[in-house]
Image (cartoon, rainbow, N blue to C red):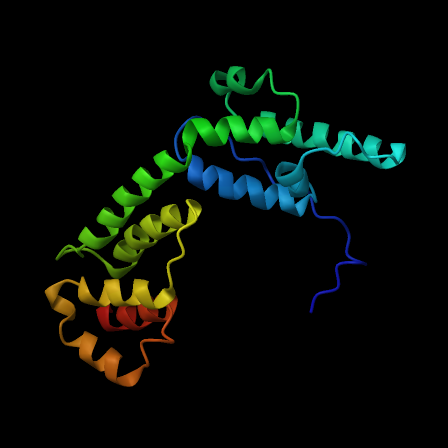
Length: 197
């Protein structure tokens, strides 16, 4: 276990710039940055204006302003006008989330399309394993960003049944040598890449 109490502070993580494309990835990066700066709780609860302890309220408002600054730095000038009127970090986040991720109905439609894309994935004959895994995991990551839980065994099964014919001889040996229920996508990729080489 790493002891963080005596380590010097790390330089701040660079804030990714959102220009209107790739909201899911940007939001994941931003959540991680905000959590690392102990700010994410404000995006879930907001500032409790009824806080009786004035020192705590002042600290919460200062953290909220800092959080807003982080979000504002993370959006391109062309998108800044969308959040300029927001009065809290939570409001900034919600505006961007609604515009680029949508409400539950829009999310449901997007998830449906991603499920279809996942099921229709097939490895191309001339495609490298690493490239195919990147395509699979990109769709899995997008689904997970929308809250869909996808087990490793589902990913492994999908990959094994969608490999190009050049891997037909490898699949049975992997299934025999490894319990598919405990095989991770990363281990599967390693096995397939060693066969590819």
